[in-house]
Length: 341
Ligand SMILES: NC(=O)c1ccc[n+]([C@@H]2O[C@H](COP(=O)([O-])OP(=O)(O)OC[C@H]3O[C@@H](n4cnc5c(N)ncnc54)[C@H](O)[C@@H]3O)[C@@H](O)[C@H]2O)c1
Image (cartoon, rainbow, N blue to C red):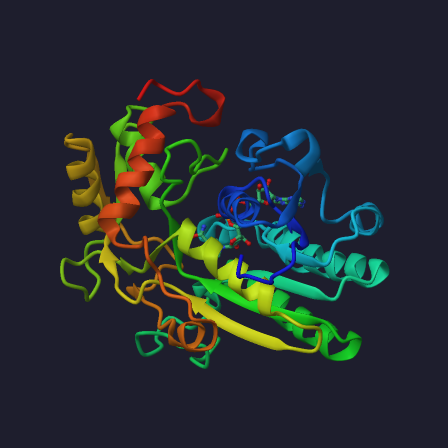
């Protein structure tokens, strides 16, 4: 926290999830007073320090309960992470994605209105951009999403903008690229009930919890034929949330991309994981997955220029090293006791 910055009471929907809990721990370590509101459908109680005081179990669809919690805790700002976030699942079951990502966001905004909370940060995504935009993507690249995950997150952006204009909210839309990595001490990391993210899937295969890694498509127009993604460490995401919340005022509206500005292919990530583990990791190339563009890379110049943010932990080696430390020490996730040292 900068000198002179006062402690803020911040509620994080989805604050027991992977990115939300990393932000909560960061805010706590930087002098703020965060609480998580999470239904634990994917998140973990053990990811929230001081969970008895800092984790409230609840569904974002329950507007009345959320408004009561916001009022009782005198919350000044909301960080809205809670969402369904798998591209393939969204194609199979759009109903759930509209319900949680769109109606759920409306419920969060209605609860904020009822409780008089006037600042919101929203976890948006690279998936709100079109597949064929010029790389790197900037904030004014065309937003023409091609999957229900992307359309529902973009609809949530629109809801926030319309509410902000009418009801005087301040908002910041933070469009993450691929969140990755684990806390440097190896105590907290990525552990969902339904895993669909590349790096945890690779380490689950390295640990024998999955038979192999499926590489979806090796015929993309990229340097080795596999998809290029921009990986950003959760510590860098967390710092961006801190800077954004400390500078947000009612009536202000901003959108920022959060990425490292460089991309890695699926095979490059796999090789980096093999290097970190010292093991060959079983993998197999299968057909392309619907909804996967060839390349997604961010320009984060706007937040660098306006808030002085720059990624410090997002080299792929550091991401993979911290993620492996977490998986190695917690081979069955938060349910397991850490292995020594
Ligand atoms: N992980 C990424 O690479 C990435 C990239 C871009 C954007 N995002 C966005 O960041 C946010 C967090 O993603 P994540 O990777 O941490 O996902 P996650 O699944 O680990 O976390 C989401 C959390 O929301 C909770 N949740 C879901 N539905 C809820 C409901 N109805 N009520 C209350 N809580 C509910 C889950 O229990 C979970 O703890 C999401 O909004 C996602 O769209 C993530």
